[in-house]
Image (cartoon, rainbow, N blue to C red; front, side, top):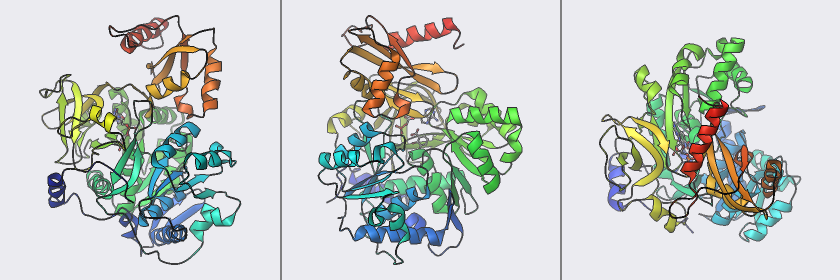
Length: 542
Ligand code: AMP
Ligand code: DBH
């Protein structure tokens, strides 16, 4: 059975092929290209693998999973942290045509349940070190929720036949590849989302492989690239822009770090002579601070390129990167749905510090729409509309929502407010979607509001962003409750529901009523303005 998804129109498919974007190769080709190379591919914790050893591990796991008689197109829910096994699992599953969804390690039961409900996995790959999987109760719950779920493989599993590490190390056969067709879904990517349920993005081999190859070209990744992966490995940005997959394509080295803090990353950069890494803006601020305080920039001397994306980077911070960290800045504005923009390595300082770059592909169609869907002239701010050779055509099994975010010509409206120059350079000036961007981690307001409304005391609620000097934005929950309620009670309630920590509101404001718009919806704009004024009065922002 194949995973359903919205195809590109045949005419465009043919065009993308003719232009050389779609090469009809499956993604497991990325490490497989180097299967006879003894060059280092991956360093993580106390493990290191050459390309030959990496491919052998992929083959071992692929053959061991194949023995379980899973069928082509069945799905797997995967949750692993920043460890070598993440990539071994990813490529092994692709090699045998199992379609993974990689949850972030920060995700908890609520998110995992929502993913499982949507993809109905046959296989679960996870880690006993994660709170949801330290015991079997949640696994049993998932099995009841998804009767398809028959196979469980865990890091640290007590039984060796279900222990992921054992399944990766055991065996020595080459695995016969049986991937899904390159035109079909390779895996699910996660959307930051703006509605109640987390949305899934089907990514095909053809579209994803193109975005990776083209990114490698733009960012000049080669076999001498040494990349530090310090953001969550499953996220689209460190995975594909050009990310770890780009490095593997080029035959370079990926070093895994647990988190992007200077304390963790600086020694890695020094010890492994890292040449490039990707960060979100709050981490950049911490790096600048660390260098200023401790004069650590000599530890960064091998670093030539720093990619920054995922959230707004202030021009002031952008301009400090080269002089203080001693490396070039590349801004990256992307989305798991597809479109990725980069400032180019030969762009002027001005462009690199004041824009979020331009699209990867000459055939990325990007235009700016006004509120009625009319095209705006260059320089005017409006909605980002896009379609192209690696931008999806619809969320997984969600026709109703798709209708809302795609226009009749298949252009996706990302919810970002941008301006664009005649040369195609984009500046993100705002956001229309009901989302909080907490330093690159996206929170769909409605998802949290729905959970809060399950609390017996809560009558109304609205989650809105507040300005934060480090993270850019934090979240604030406005609450109307039947009886007085303490912020801590609410946070405890949310934690008990099992949601990722970054989604727990940073501030809680209990009020008597929420402002409403003319049609009776909560007026979030009014709330934001009020909060902004409050913050200014308190001197929390300038
Ligand atoms: P996601 O849906 O989680 O893939 O997040 C994609 C969204 O992150 C984009 O639609 C933007 O709202 C935001 N984003 C990503 N990169 C940048 C950037 N460089 N500047 C501003 N916003 C960004
Ligand atoms: O925020 C993102 O989702 C993102 C940022 C930079 C992304 O998906 C990407 C590059 O590919």
